[in-house]
Length: 352
Image (cartoon, rainbow, N blue to C red; front, side):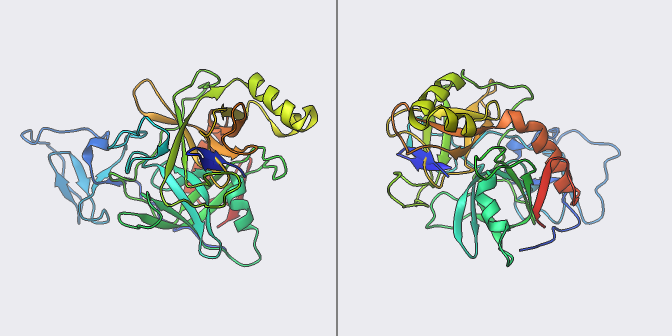
């Protein structure tokens, strides 16, 4: 991703088997983020008998299985897009626990790779160009995702999990970064707490171009296009307005020429945001999320950092995957991943 929170954020640009049995419920430490029915503890529940090895929590009417860690409770429907701490209204360093869906992708061999975003307890979405160069190695590469990370100097309350599957869009073009999206399946599920929560996917047919001016991009990318300081110690954020496709095309045509612009900008699969001096994503932010608030105050995933030209230059925009355009692909690929299939429509399994 152009990953530079300049602050600003400007973002540019093994083989393991997943466990055969998946957890069919999530584990949460805070029942307020669980949509399961809440029962008054003074009301009896006829006919409800816990299974062997399970106990019933009458306050929340959720069965607590032995495979949820101590302090966590079973939940079948987790609230998405909300955080215990509201994001700061300023661009710069983010506030701890305010972006609990932010994912940090790395490998044992090559270190930090880029950003991603947590969709549910098993799945992380990122840009294909952040992982394609890890899955094409002659020797297996152990890819990991860290969730709940704020400062790269502290692993307190961080959950780091090995990636079991990588699904890359079948039409991904590494030259022009079109269809630049990949789905990662974690080998074990993450547990939800104050600093690890899922983002909401957008509604089908949602269009954020060009009506969204309150959107937020985050990442550990470079703070300047010319300064290779990624990953930065602290997670950064930047508020960037989404602009019209015509405005983005005009800007890049002046910079790259009409032919190159037509090759690299692929609407509606991409969208553009930013254009403010020193407020942007930057190199090595690739794959990190662009989120926008919805009508219920929950954040929805609108974009993924793909590429740009320099970082934080006025009138020059960051290019993002337009997530609503890939909603069907994301949902169908999540189903393939959950079933550990080898073949999936318009998706290529590059790590298993």
